[in-house]
Image 1 (cartoon, helix red, strand yellow):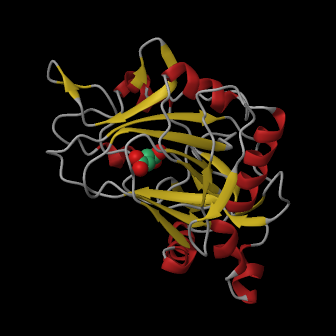
Image 2 (image 1 turned 180 degrees about the vertical axis):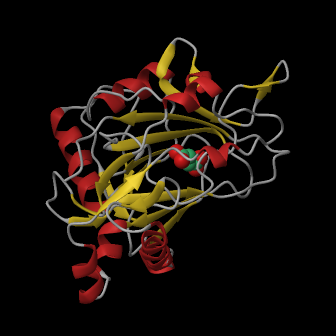
Image 3 (image 1 turned 45 degrees about the vertical axis):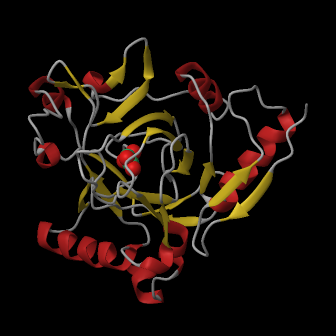
Length: 282
Ligand code: SIN
């Protein structure tokens, strides 16, 4: 039976719920085209009440491109390295997932030369409150800059790096091994990138991984970034996703930042993420 999809905006800033999709089944080309269009238009898509095996999660994600394998291999799902486990579940005293991932504004993996198109996060078990994910529309953030700031950032490139300081072990979790830390390199991306599909400009700096501006003294770069981060952190650009069990949320890393929020760790938060490879930002 053909799926009839309904796309319902979730906030004035970004985000839409796609109603009528069963992502455990292969999608027709028409249904896929509708989802792809909605993703470009709304930047974050929410699919409620999905019953997905890891293989089905991966199969749906692969419709959008090849999948990225995260460098933190200790948190990849056994037999499914395309899935990064974000979880506070412990087995035998050991964290099975990256427990406090993303508790700061960031876009995924901007510390790599070719950062991802998007990420698909599946809420297997979510706490009764807290543990929400905030999303910010970086097209809107760019468009809201005043003309002088737009001129100032045009043509600048920012330096990105995986932030070892965020290793802060919680409950003994080690996020980055010494071997992984030794492989970390700095990369640079335009401060304003042009989305390869929509053609729209988006701010592409984030507090999580952007560490400086190429060609500017450390203090000048830090001052400009502080100004941009302050500008971005504004409710008018945001949507707060309050998770329900078995939500799948698919965001566009090319024009969206996100931020996981705290929750009481007596509750389980067990999430599975696939990440679709993207293009070199221009
Ligand atoms: C992430 O940064 O991908 C995790 C977001 C979340 O757990 O809400």
